[in-house]
Amino acid sequence: MNTEPANRIESESSAYLSIGIIAWNEETAIRSLLETVFQQTLFADLHKRQLHCEIHCVANGCTDRTVEAATEIFAEQKRMHPHAAAFSCRVVNLKERGKINAWNEFVHSASVREAEFLTLMDADIVIHNPDTLLSLLRTLETYREAKIAVDTPCKDIEFKSRLTAPERMSLAMSRLTRSASAQLCAQLYCIRAETARNIYLPKDLTACDDGFIKTLVCTDFLAHAVWPMRIQIARNASHTFEAYVSLPGVFKNQKRQAIGQTLVHLLVDDYLKRLPMWERNRLAETLRRKDRDNPDWLKQLVRDHLRRKRFFWRLYPGLLSHRFNRLSHFRGWKRIAYFPAALAGSMVSVFASFAAYRFLKSGGTGYWPRVNRGPLQTLNLPGEALSSFTHLKTQ
Image (cartoon, rainbow, N blue to C red; front, side, top):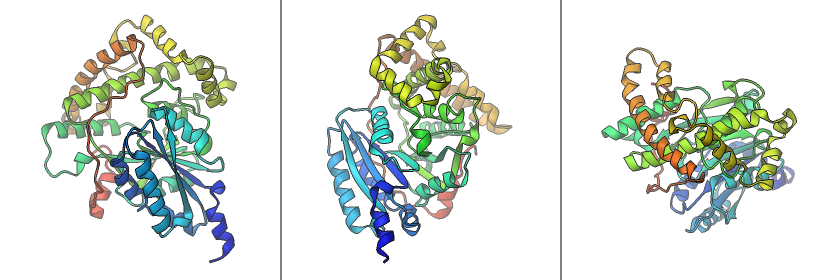
């Protein structure tokens, strides 16, 4: 092999793509994820093009063996992977728990500055289509107007032959969500580095980081109305995550979502729009400075908001109606078929939003409930099944 290309591949400082895997106490789950990551066709493609990729496992506040497990797997892959020359990998061990801090650390510090694209993923998923990461990258390389490429998130219960009533309801709710345009699932996506590095997640955001990122990206940092083309769905790209099916699990997740959506509403619908344009153009620097100078600035916005909006159903616009609004994306019998899911979801939202209101009223914002869920297994599906789930949106 020519030594010059080999040296260029081995150079971490010239990484074309940087991958960040955010993990909190996932010593078992991360093994399943990394198995599917290193089976991706991405690495063969990068090797062929003489490009380099770096992989970071950003462990945050872990109290189990997540760090050790990731370190062992990374070392094994560097020894045995057929395209090991195309990637480097390391574990970033943060003492502070929290996805927000881990996201900021990866985007603004850990990832190499020369990277043109950043891929972020959670550690508790599996990627069952081997072309997923490559398809995400190629989507951004192909569509210059796109800032983010997403795959199709699939709940693990979608692959079951027989579903319980709660599982059928869970899938119907997911299809309601996927019926809207420009959806961003924070579990896995690829973003242009220059775009990501103008975003800083306030430390008290805690949830709905995907909604915050989506709004900033689709409006070019609040410069205009939402342009859905900023987010493109990659073909033949999908990942699987474990669904919340139990009522306590669904409730806790909806409470967390209500808290996050309230914070996103305060930021993108009001506060950030009132900033001077020069501060919005350097938004990451602006928000980092606010966190540094006044760590409670976002909590103060929440306190002011709750004094103005004295009832829980006024936490954010569309709290009671957004699921019913999504029924308009369906026609004929499908609208009737998905009505029970919209109704059930709205009912859960009412109770979860009341709990979120009380939590915010107490002065809290950091709500990260831990729901007991086992590790996902690698899914071996025939090509037809992969295709049907990858392109599933509103059917």
